[in-house]
Length: 140
Image 1 (spheres, rainbow, N blue to C red):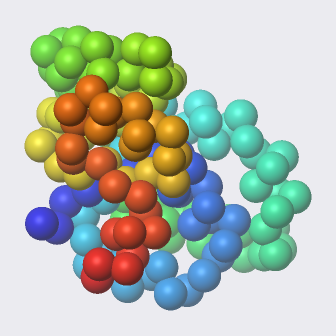
Image 2: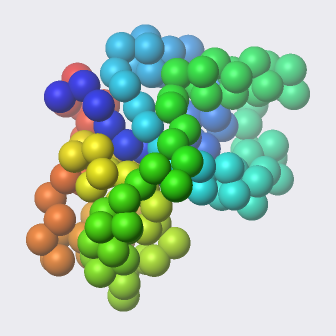
Image 3: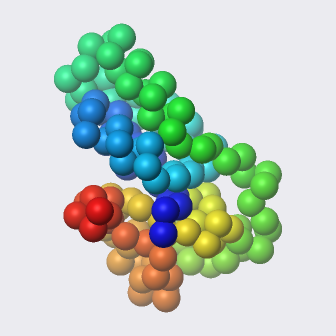
């Protein structure tokens, strides 16, 4: 499997780190994320700027690289069926993650996240196409 859906916490941690070791991974695999990711990045903009060791220009260049490798998918192309399934799965877990789960369902791909509560909650409801980003990195 070469296609994965990534959520905002994965992308934000990659942006904060600025590690060049992510470049070949981002280039080799196909990563997708819903357009909702931009809302979350904007929400955590100050955290990103505080935590990164990159200067402003380096962060800008690295972020351009990251988003040149990740396909951002508009919600309009995610089927209502996938959204409804995702809503059922994320209710009482974390409904703000519905877009990520819906995209994973739509693409029939694994969702990569750093949110252990989301993984636990979704697996409890029978959703198996999810794994921690750390487990993904260890598996490659």
